[in-house]
Amino acid sequence: MSKKEEKDKKTGAWNYYVVDLQKKEVKLTKKKCPRCGNFLAFHEEGRKRYYCGNCHYTEFVAT
Ligand SMILES: [Zn+2]
Image (cartoon, rainbow, N blue to C red; front, side, top):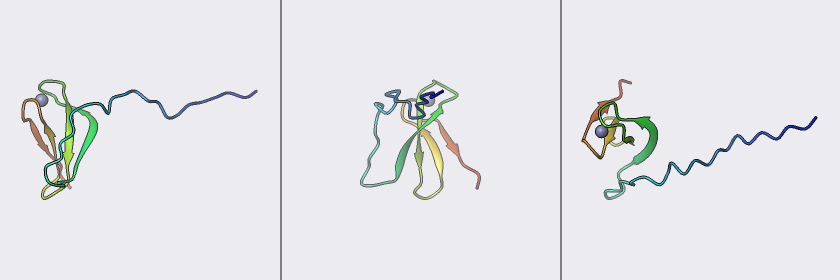
């Protein structure tokens, strides 16, 4: 019984906006904005936070 399991699902969710302001560490996440439902970007420089490029919602990460 061989069952193929494709764990790498390609959803195409990476085709969102990419924020690249002079090599500031910004990663797109699958976390959604509680305000507008847009995908949040994760900023690592300075204080870690999630940021919505649509409505400017910011969520700081408590470390
Ligand atoms: Zn938002």
